[in-house]
Image (cartoon, rainbow, N blue to C red; front, side, top):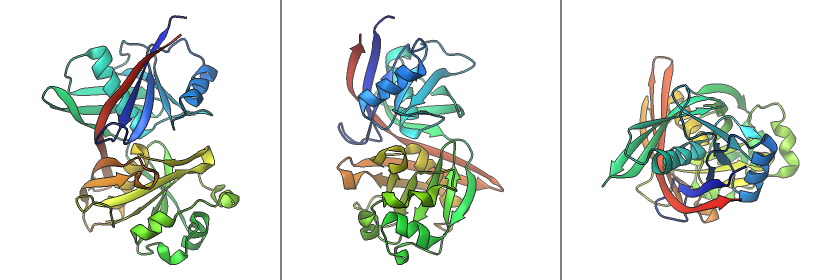
Length: 294
């Protein structure tokens, strides 16, 4: 097997060494699933992506996303980060849209440019699907919170745009800071398809932002993610579905990762028309490093 090129990028980052890090491997078609899992473990990030070939097929680039333990059908920061690498390293010219063929389906990524370089990248996620709701006291106990920390004007609900999350509305930033997953209570999630939790509140560290969020995936061995496009896409659908801002359209700045020293900024757009919800998640991608795997 020939040597593999790989790239490290920061996704949803306003500057280098912020946001969510991603490793992207190129021309990886010959790798087995076991090898992809091993490389994802070696990289020690929440996910690692593998571009199978440099040539698009069926309208898009074939991409697989792996954690150290399994392949995932869709994830947000791997989608944006991989599209960035394809534009920079394979296409090597400005292009409006790149389509990724993922296990969850085709995901288009749209590029905005500034001075000829990629600025904000946007991905259109699959339409959100709304699942079970949960008892506030149960979820509060899992998060190590008093049940009054949860904003009971809105439901706690499972939402998926390709990967399911439990969306939990909290009242204050102080409650966000206090969240600690109680691992001895994971059994509370057994009936749910979603094993990861996103909590959010309208109080923020910075006044120009609209929401603060944290995402916990302890069940999968990821204690906390600094920036999660898939979960925030679910959040965007949730916000318009339940008219959190008393509107059917949102255009928001969301901060994440501040509590773990990886401050991130995600941009959310969503619109509800009749029963159809369209979700866009955007952010910047910054190149960190390039390497070769023997």
